[in-house]
Image (cartoon, rainbow, N blue to C red; front, side):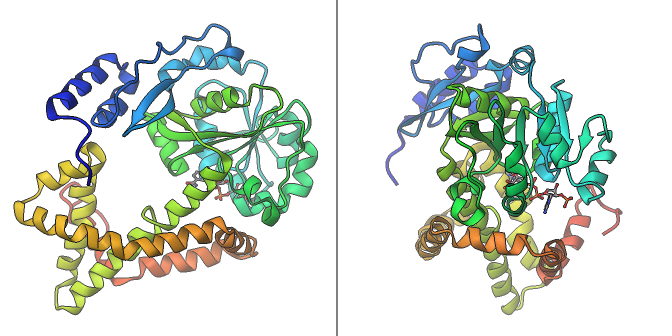
Length: 408
Ligand SMILES: NC(=O)c1ccc[n+]([C@@H]2O[C@H](COP(=O)([O-])OP(=O)(O)OC[C@H]3O[C@@H](n4cnc5c(N)ncnc54)[C@H](OP(=O)(O)O)[C@@H]3O)[C@@H](O)[C@H]2O)c1
């Protein structure tokens, strides 16, 4: 590893400067980032004066690379109301993102309607969340007719199958919005080719739609990326950033549709979901084969990670977590981390290529378009729940003092 860019005292000074410069909403970002991130000596971010021409951003140094960051304190609610005063957000689809983004828009006082297929699971869920048929809950087609910002939050597979019908509503003057680069980037596979006379943008929250909602309710905000696929009005990027703020983002960084979809598909198949399950399972299996009890194997693999060590990484970084552990633990972890890196590198390279060449997209579309895709997904995730490791997890979680005595 290269030497740290800052000395301890410089880091502390950066932390203090970031804390002072930050408004409350930004503070956690600044504190987290300040070890390697120093606010560049860029001019103070402009305050909003006229919505159409505003760019409220900061340039931050991400370990040597300067990037623009848009933060929510530069996008106050009154400003969003003014910016979107002539718009109707039409949420097409009400899955995890539809739920989170839709309720946040509604709570933010913006004009939002939902479009889903009638009498499906999402229709039922939307009614449960207070959307009213005929008032702000419609069929996909009706909502797409009424909306000015068409938020395509159908499943990625459904975005492809519904496109021949939906594209009729994507007409000049409307904005086409996604939360993923999937459909546009892999247009050969999806068939989604937007008309040339509309802005096409994305805001992609970096987390589940449930987290989009819970962080918003806690007064915090999810990190999101924004990108422009097509800019016919000259306003596409600004619009994407404003929408990202309106749906509850805390801070926003810029990307492209292509980079968003590659990194997203790669990340979720890797460390975020596929990789973590694979690592947990392999470690657990070896412990069990060597005679360790289920509770010991689970505690040494999952419980300690999730309850003690990973939160420390999240709050303060990997070095902090290492320092919080014993010298014995630290020696072993420092020695073995490069081994894991070496072993995993070829897998990650193969995975990235599988994303880039469209293999992952074709697989997701093929599976997502099966009639019984929900049941099939349930079958496979139920099989994970049925693995000994996660059945043990139920028992261990129920033993946590805050849950003691509650049902397993
Ligand atoms: N979930 C996340 O964590 C996350 C994070 C960032 C970005 N995204 C992106 O956000 C978008 C939405 O994802 P999501 O997870 O919220 O939703 P999802 O669960 O993938 O999709 C759910 C929606 O699609 C509808 N749908 C499925 N097949 C349909 C069909 N043939 N015709 C009409 N509607 C159909 C469902 O309606 P029914 O209930 O009627 O079936 C439901 O409203 C995707 O582009 C995704 O990649 C997701």
